[in-house]
Length: 430
Ligand code: NAD
Image: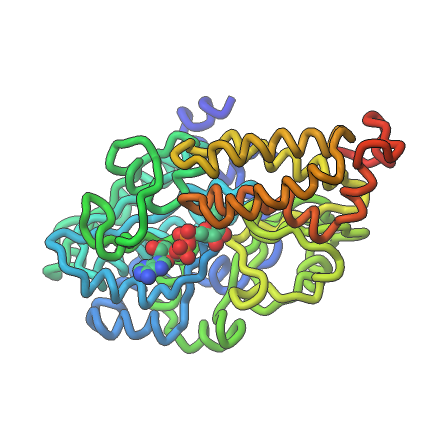
């Protein structure tokens, strides 16, 4: 049992293969996954340079947020550094809830020092004394491993009072989420960290000016912080030299679905979808979901597009569906996922996700007519424009992409088209 492994303190590396808890295999490692900055190297280098120079290095590298939105990390840190407020904080978003993404889990399992080091460097730059890592509820089994890493960092003077004998003091706590997808939204995460139900706040103000307990807060994704530490340890030039002009550096992709070799891959930004599919041994690919269900579902017509913030941006999920898959059923399942995870705060999301779930059932079961397709599009557009947070704004994506990129497939499922629910062209559900 999972609990036995945790209680017996079995190292993660020795857990049985195939357990969901064991990180997916690393298939293609680049500098982030295979490079070895020594523990403390980034922090020592940042502290030798001073706050402004360390921040300059991050800006020079052009690092952008790896949670999916791609906001400039250097700008985020500068805004938090310059914001008015006595107590500042660094929060790490380890609530990796997007279906199909597991690269943060791998980083936490294999490179926790790099993640904590990124938090410490951010704390040093903005003048924070406290960092909090918000760990996805389903990753609770990582807790002993992460705590042991924090203890080691304390023992080596990399955390706590007077870090490395300087006047900089910084400590990190870990707080466990309870399994709500919406808590990956940064302000819902802050609410949850403060002990309340995870409901997104209105933005602005952004966390950089009013975040955890109202203080200026840098909230970054696990991978962003790991890259930040890597950049500080190795310098900005190597990072900047990779990727594209607008999306420098590398990106971890969680590759899953109908591929010969699923796992975590480290690519340079700018790689095409087709190249990724070749690398992971995909064949007869019908569709790829880039960025999870809140991202985009593309067809073969888009396989020459690039993984980059200026083209296809992704928090890391890259899920492949071959020609045997029933995409209508897949869109239906993801639509139900969003309906289940809606926090219920705003009407467009609370009601819209329910309406879409019902419409998706009708479509998948061959009970929808042409007017239903139009209604899905109208509801989806309305939700995109009026929902309070990213959940409601993106919940219609699986259905909207299905309708725009796989229209004939949807039309073949309409009422009166000879559809037989038990034999959908021999296609398998997800
Ligand atoms: P966003 O673009 O609104 O914000 C991105 C970041 O930039 C936030 O930290 C925000 O505080 C900051 N920011 C934006 N404008 C700012 C400003 N004017 N001043 C200061 N800071 C500013 O995006 P979002 O709604 O926070 O996140 C959406 C993204 O999350 C999507 O791209 C989606 O792909 C991704 N996502 C990821 C997961 C996952 O599991 N990794 C799950 C769901 C969604």
